[in-house]
Image (cartoon, rainbow, N blue to C red; front, side, top):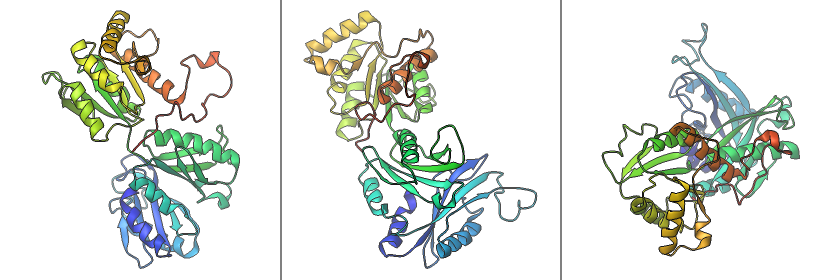
Length: 383
């Protein structure tokens, strides 16, 4: 949807109504991902695409109807024996497309949302795309890290959707959430499409070792943009870290300092120091532990290595408050042995710190499973 916001906002500012078609769900080999969007302006001009050409004509016609009557529609497009060569996706995929009329009346928060996106402030929209009561369809929340505007129809639904939508926003993901008609978690009937407007949080993995490859895989699974950095070019190769988004050959402390200077580190960034070699990790941690904002800093090593590392960092001038930001030895106590098991323990600690979890078995705890939104624990974006 990002790529059509300027065209959508132009119609909105002119006081007119545009048809907005958004891919909310895909199956099999669909050509465009969830979040892809097309705008039909009042003069009939089109911006964006929902299918790369397969069903654009049908969506265009439907958008015109929605502009005329104002009733939003959730439409599925796919291939069957009857429509494979008519309105359908010849690639074999299936798309659910939500078409709505957008104007100052239907989407009063649009301009503020665009301002957030332009300023790199994380925000999300949560729109009801299916509900037993047609009056709910098209209602939306605009969700930020510290506030929510709009309503879906009840306080219960607003609270449940906000909670889960912030989880998607935290990882920069978009998708459909399903609830009962009043926001019940164990139920169905209400589908809500969450469009997240936030860059993926970063995971910086320092040390091109076998544990790093496993941690990079876990980071990708959790939705992070993963960078592996090591000063040794023979080890820091894309072939050894295929799931990483980038592999960088540089001294770790220099790379981290340069990223901070460029404004590419924020409060959602997680840093995993796996070198357990003082010539690498001590200078690196000097930089990391002095960063004004970062979500998590963990360092690998034995308890003896940890004590030696703390002594070296104190000699370098770090104080107790700065050292308290360090999770070392890294990870939760899962009894992990292999690199893959260790990566799970590291990922578990990152999740627990982000959401305020205890790391204890849920069977040994009481109360709500999903923790309340907690700004002191959530990894919030400064971008």
